[in-house]
Length: 309
Image (cartoon, rainbow, N blue to C red; front, side):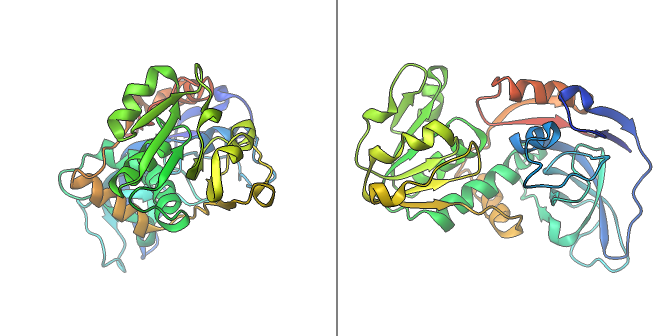
């Protein structure tokens, strides 16, 4: 099989395209011919060695947190999937990633792709959809009329949070680059605040803030929340919890690999209730270029994908 692999921490140039032996299969495992894998910020941070304190990388490492493709082989003990099934793959930490032409998985790590949804669309929704679903439905309390601010509203996760909150009847504001204001409004934000030309600190009385940025953005989000408001954050730049000082609730959205939220997001997309967001598609051989673009801040709308098949 063809795969991207790196054997040490470093810049995007450590990513190498290799021909590797096919992985063996146990009776309860399934081989998936991957067509697409998504490129996440976590992939880049792991490769650069920025998360050594939190995650152990076993070298050599095939990166990638998720992907989509078609079942090509099933073990003798498998009953849930058959050859030809289109599936999404969750690549759990400590296992081979998805930057490869195929992957061996267990049934618990596969989610069927609904009819009418392309592999590209499905791949863009796995990791981002999981994060958005947990943030909105399991961490925040969104009701009709809730005033919500979504930081990085044009990104893969932020754009889905905007859409989910809109569907719930919230009054959604999103921060983004000036060039993306029309885009986030098209996703359902009633207001877009361009962080490169405007000050989101002029907002007030927000019920919920979704912080996908951290750092200074997190610190400046406290004053715009009403008393008793809720600041929901995902791991990004380091934060200082000042909830008690401002009289607001501060909660980290705990994202763990689970099939159910991904199934729900894929179903919504297949029904047209949310729109997949694809920043672009590059060949597997250009994984280093995908990482470079992401780290340079050039990927600002949705998820960058690799064509792995």
